[in-house]
Structure formats: C-alpha cells, structure tokens
Image (cartoon, rainbow, N blue to C red; front, side, top):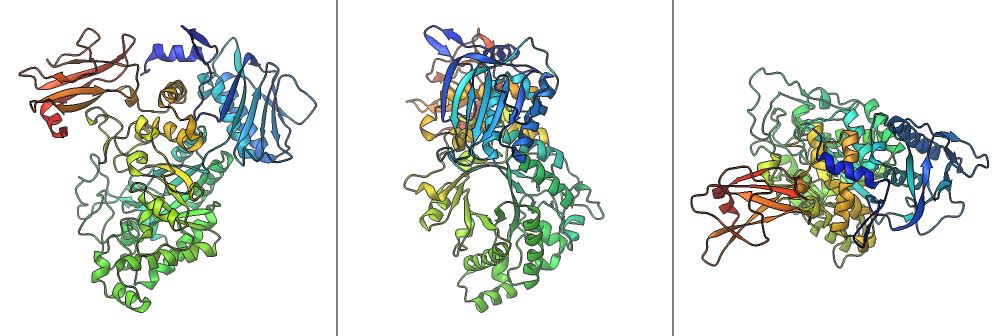
Length: 632
C-alpha cells in the first residue's frame, strides 16, 4: 500500500526545485545525516548519459566505489555513467579525487563535495570519504535513484552546492540479533547496504545466544548441527511450549564460513566494519546444549524460544578448563574470519548462582585467589582477552565486564544507561555508548495498541532516539568511540519487522553519531527525515510511520479525576478524537493543547492525526480503564 501518496508527490517535486513560502525559503537540499557545512549555489548540474565518472585517485577501492554508484544510477534511472581513467576532461564529469596532502579537518571519513553547472568534484583523504561523498550526492538526486526499476524522466539534475563534511564519531553502529530469530545472509547484506547509505559504519553481528548458535566453527560441529536448531513455534516469544518428546528441531539456521566471508567482503565495499559477537560466559545455552559438560550441572537441555529460563543453567562453567580450549578454537576462527579490530564477547547477565554451587568454579576461585563470583567473571573475561590479543584483536563487552575488575585493554559497551561508559572512561578505557533508554530498537516506538511489537522497556520514538548524547557530562570525549543502536530480536521474527523497528529511528542516530552536536535541531531533522521516506518506498524498505501517530498522556485534574492530553512527535499535526466509538476525522473535536474531560459513560477514546486536512497517522483506539494505569 502506498503511504501518504500526495505527500510523497510533493516531496519528489521539492528535490528538483526550491520554493518560497511567504518570506521563508524552503531548501531542496535535505540530507541525513546533516553535513558539517553546506553552501547552496545557483543552478543545477544535468545528469545525462554523457556524464563520465573520472577516478583521479587511481585507487582500486575508489574504482569499486564508483562502480557501485554507477550501477545504482543505471538500475534506477537507465543512465549509464561510464567510469574512465584520467583524460583531461573537465565538463560533464564526476571527479573522484584523493588528497595528496592530507586535509586534517576532514579526517579518514570526511569529504568535500562541489557541484557546479558543469562538473561534480568529490575530494577526500581516504576511499571511505569518497564513498560517503557519493552517498550525499545520491541524496541530492530525486528519490527515484533509490529504487530498482528504471524511471524515465525528462531531466535529472543535481542542485549546485558546496559541502564540507566529516563525522563526529568513528563508531556509528547498528546491532542485529540473529540468535533469537535467524536472518538470511541476503537480508544481512541488505541491512548493511541500508545502513551504509546513511553513513553508519559498524555492523555489530550478535551471532550467539541462548536461542541459537549461528556461525560454523570447524572442529566443533555440534555448535551448528545441534545448537543452531530448535523446534518450530509461532506466536509470542517467551510463551511457547517446551519441546515435546521426540519432536524434531527444524527451526533455525547458521552461516557457513564461506557465508561469513561473503558478507564481510560485501560490507568492506561499503566501508562497514563488522564486529562479531560470541556471548560468554552467560547467554550460552546454545553452546551448553551442544556440549552439556560445558555447564556447571552437566544436564542435557534443549534450545527453545524462551528468553531466560530460571531453572536452566545458561552460564559456562568457569572451572572447566575444556571450555577455555573450545573458546580458543572459536575465537581463533572468529579472528581469522573478521578483519576488523574488535570482537565482542558479551559478558552480560551471567547468572552466578550455578557458580556458587559448582565445586569446579569454587576450586577455580580458591586457586586464583578470587574473592567472589564477580571476580570469577572478570577472570573469565581476561582469559578470553588474552586469546584475542594474541590474534591482534581488541575485546569489547557489555558494561557488566566492569564487575570484578576490567580486562586491561577492553572496550566497554554501555547499555544500562550511561553509567558503564562513564566508569570505563574514568578508568582510562574506551567506551561505546548504547544506552537502552535511547538506543534499544526492540522497544516500542509508539502506542502499543498500534505497534503490536513489544519486548519490554519504555517507548523510544524517533525524537527520543534523536535526544541521545554519546558524551556524558564531565567525561573526556577522547574515550568515547561513538554510539550504537541495538535490535534484539525476541519479538522480531521476520526481515520486514526488523526493517520496521530500525527505520526511521536509525536515521536519528545516524545524525547523532555523524553531525556536529551544535547543529542538532529536531524540527529541522524531522523535515529532512520525511524526505527519506520516498526513498524507502522506492527501495521497498518497511519503515515505521509511527512518527505520525498520536500518543495519549492521561493526567489528573484538581479533583483527582482523569483527563487526557495528546502528543505528537511532529509539530505540524492536528489531533482529532471521539469518545463515542466512531471514527474520528477532521470534523470531529480537535485537540486544543489542554487536558480534555472525559464524558460520563465513555469507555474508549479514538484518536487520529491529520496534516493540512488530510489523515496521516494511524487510528489509535484505547480503553479508558487501560489508561488509568498510566496516571501518576
């Protein structure tokens, strides 16, 4: 179904012109994330089949980047831009140039982009900058260039502009959990492609957890022949029945090492670094199911779609030396498959009750002079760190790795708010900020009565994600590598839902992680964000329209009675409502920004948003008794 067709038609027109509304000029240039500096010029550059891409750098990487750009233009417009060697041509060219003398301001990923009536020039220090410059250039073109079908237009043009741009942070990440639900390598590549277009450069691949082991490890075949599969269940995660006796485990999957190499190469061409995660010592049920003696109990469990079963041992035995031998095999192969600097080892939510009762773990603590189970976890993580350091890798872990003493070179990923990142920075360690109150994309982004996708936690709309600040007050910014959004997949059972939960919230964080803090402005971003929706439509990306929906906030009046207020993320929306169980429209009562009294006998409220007398949000129906629980 086409969303808001008339709005998209207007948006498309704005890409090829600037309009004047009263005294305010509305720019046609709407880029996400916002560049550091933009100077608009008069005129346009015509994009025709006569235009050539000239790789002045001679770099193979730049050549591959140019090819990707050319293929996208041909796929969507039918215009074939030839890539040619340096031949002295100036007019009707897109020149890609690497600086001979490094521009210190723009760094490794920055670029300058100059569009005149006769040529386009993108200059950078490194090939990554050329890639990001071309992503910006794509956004200067109409949204059809994001599609797959050739679109005939009388004229394709690029507005003349001068742009200087570079990122605020080096780590600009998205995490996809493929353990709770398995996603094919084709979707993983699509996900990487989508994030790279908005200058997100780190893909955190959560490959193992209680609900499935997703990567082939040679020499340990049971991890994938057993640990990658569970009995099929459909419905609400965490409520499924346990496997019946003799029931076959047919739901799941894993990536072969050849699959991994293919995805890594795909990501490298888009300047996305993959950070693999093998979660230990907790969240290890799939490991334990594959090798029962890996736990403290030695019991045989089954992989299932529950979340955290209180009666199951989900933690690797820290006193079992064979576990460390297996982990050395695992992390050695992980290190060889992923060329990036970082490997994530989890380290979160390791339930220590089994360690307290385990003779092997208690003996390990005695032998190593460890005071408590927190120090035993630190011992465990430090042993993994030694393996990674021997392979030239840096360990990353969730903020629980701070407990009992931090591994010497570890990077802390702060998810329980910002406290873990603050503590790490104070101890001289680098941190990646991923606070769950801003960056957990498994959490709802609108009213649950509409969203119906929920995994606990508070509402995180696009505007909430946009409020994220990676550098906490009083922390030296040099210790903050950047930030990351996380999509846990307990309630994300398909690629379409994964996209829905990611976009457009990832647009907000792409700007938080890339653009200067001083340029952050929600109302301005909201306009530029909406300009991306036609691009999502053309690409078939299932983005969430939640930003158009209303939210209900009940309040108490002076008599202690409940009244209702309505909020919207976008400032230019009107809210209409009814209490008589009829569909509201723009002839219904309009919300006037003050609490509404509830008519006697009413049991439900029906709410919808409009923009300029056209419905734009989805219908929200809430029972008044359910709203009473929100009263403070």
